[in-house]
Image 1 (cartoon, rainbow, N blue to C red):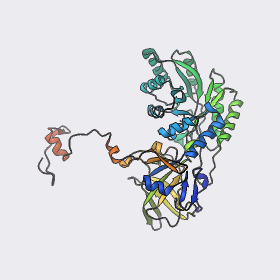
Image 2: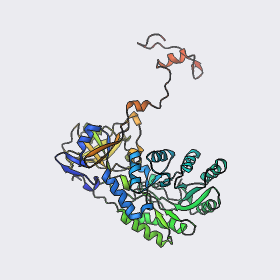
Image 3: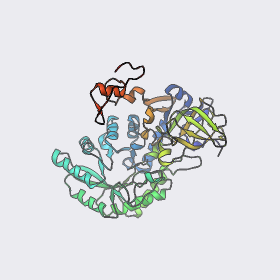
Image 4: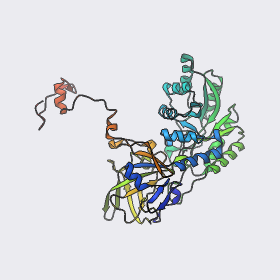
Length: 459
Ligand code: PLP
């Protein structure tokens, strides 16, 4: 494939003019010059439109944004402003949502291994409900209620419906062999409903399932919804949550179903299964993925005759681990010429110390690509920044929202000082063995002889 990047992979307000590609009427080249690279750029208008489309399809209390896809204070606020609930999956995500000013009763807490501190914070704050995942978690909720007088927890119960979907084994979650939820097949789900209904520490409200992620075929999501709806219909549940999972297009020519189509498929499926109560979905990727892109600077280009060309950028698996984790595929383009054909084939790699640090295994790029070029990978707005790490002590990139000609820094770039902030300062550095000896320490129980280090002076 040598054609230009598919516009369907770009954020909705993207436009091409004399300044190269603009998003939100801001040139990507200007953003890179101002904020540096790597840089995550989000089209704020795109994010807001996706939220509105989801609410239009599923109703005001029918959508919880799965914040694991991308969370920061600005994103939590945006989702809340647009009428979405917030799904958080840890105490940390809960903290960000609360700090963003999202009312606790618009937040739901997930997690297959919530600890007591997370449960305590959530219940004290008054979250909308907990999605309970195990009998051990019920033990903890009951203990908190008994010992600390915490109010009864509104709960939905996560079930594993025995239906899994998704683009990779690691993101298929609804099967029988899953760490998540109470199994339908072995009777655990029914036992969980009975226990939650009878316990003074819980208020049973609903059933929850999530069968997998990056699903492009709504019939797969509908099959999961039907399986769990059939079960929920036989309980006193008032609400059914059928998870997230709607996929997005990552490559030219791929197309993703709309929220409206997903809603219609889910509605038909749950009605057909005998469920007439309320339904909630939890989209993550389908809200944020296409709204975001990553800007990198090309640093080296290496041609190996008869083998391939390597193009190295200034980020890699630390800002996008998805290719390494799930063999996820992306495309790339140059913001200075997004409409250019891309006849050059190259392996686009990062700057980390391993060969698995691949951004795009077989990228199509313009023939005049050169060192110093700004390069963009679109559709990185979900599970990119959220999964970023400091591998090789790379500072995590900044995140910028653009809209109506303005760029707003919403997460600043980490600095090298930030990389040191968790290290506990020890004694001043002296040559290792000499220090151990001077401190009277031993190595493996043996006395350590001071070692003269060239240029280090005497120990
Ligand atoms: N809900 C739950 C319980 C999840 O585990 C996930 C993703 O792992 C989601 C929602 C969001 O999925 P997606 O980003 O595919 O929409």
